Length: 249
Image (cartoon, rainbow, N blue to C red):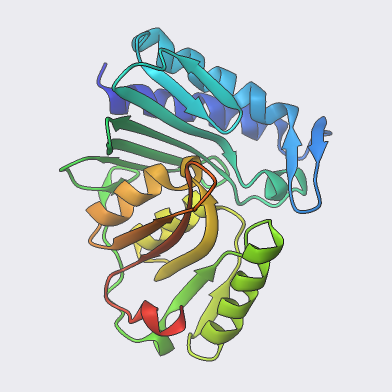
């Protein structure tokens, strides 16, 4: 099977697991001020890792819940087993599975699956992006005043302060603002034209790897600024590449 087909298989399997547990009592492994870690996060990642490693036993596996496989490989699967864990825990049906494949420095496969809506986004480097098999593209909107923006606030004090400052500034310009709780779905929505931009000052690689490839293939743009001390943590500005997003940064 091609890597993208295996990623789709893994995303669907994890999605089925999540749907079966949505709305049920869930074991909390760690409760932080602005985040939660569920036993289901680990269970979902283990399921995904198992499917990926069965087809690609020599590939590296890198997920929010840990690593696996051959860490010396030039091929690395980047996995967020539940992007939107807090939404999931509170019974808000806005969460997803995000799977990307990186070869050296390039993301070459991206899959994002929303189990609640049964929406599947797929993309391969150099190819077209799809939602449920239909080609997609970013919106044609060019004005902030007609746009819908997603501004994330992160989980640290500094990122929260910066996010709230941006949210206030953007609110004065945009048609509507959203804080949705899933970076991967936010980027998938940009690629589909449902949103026009996503901005956050601190986000992890597994949240955005698949989404970056999807947005760029759909005609948008993504700028990542590495965190000065935290590895694989970034500031992100992703948009349809048409609205003047820099005016609210």
